[in-house]
Amino acid sequence: LNIPFGQVSENNLYDDVTKLLDFLVSSGVHCYNDKGNVIYSGNGYLGIHSISDGAVDISLPKKFRIIPLLGRSFPEQIADSSFVDMKKYETVLFELNEA
Image (cartoon, rainbow, N blue to C red; front, side):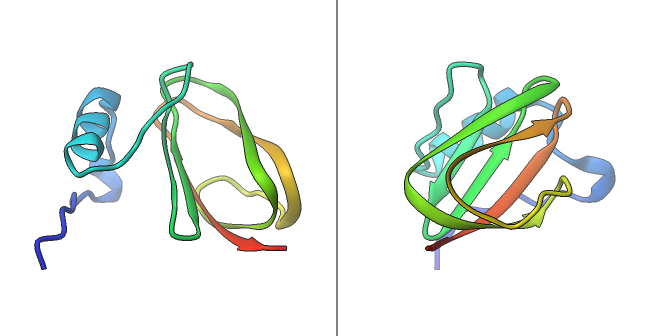
């Protein structure tokens, strides 16, 4: 199917933001954030890979049910904005469903 993928284990998570960003961009993913975090949003998912410790603001175009799938403990909520407190090199993944 020619679908790009990266294989990691719990002991080998991406700890190099530049490598992860290069992989995503070379695979056609649009990545952006003024703090250098790697962000993917599309097909009903939102993924964030943090470059440093601290809060990452989430701003959505409209209200969605935000369901945590991977990473930090995060209460499911319906919102158009939120934030998640992250650790350096942590990755979180959310499912987004129209509210």
